[in-house]
Image (cartoon, rainbow, N blue to C red; front, side, top):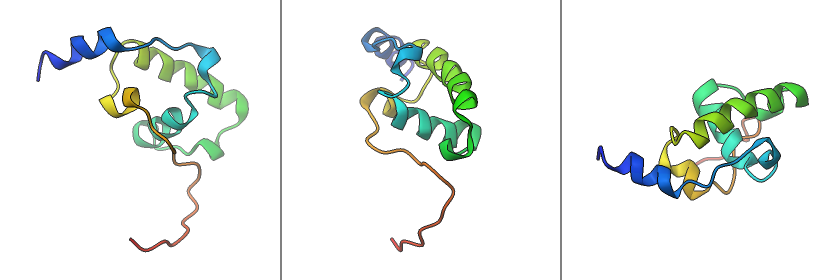
Length: 85
């Protein structure tokens, strides 16, 4: 398992602040799981500032592999739709 990280890092396509929209689902998921915040609760300026931290983590290969594989939807708000599973 220790060798997985470096090989994953080689496969990572680096992102920048310009990927704000392209990586929004991954960002929204990271925001909720790592920071305990919902994307909808942030101002546009605040979201972009925090996105830069996400970019640094991404480019260092420090995020769980699910982020690099791709996330199709992200948590947007704290609203509970009361959907039973």
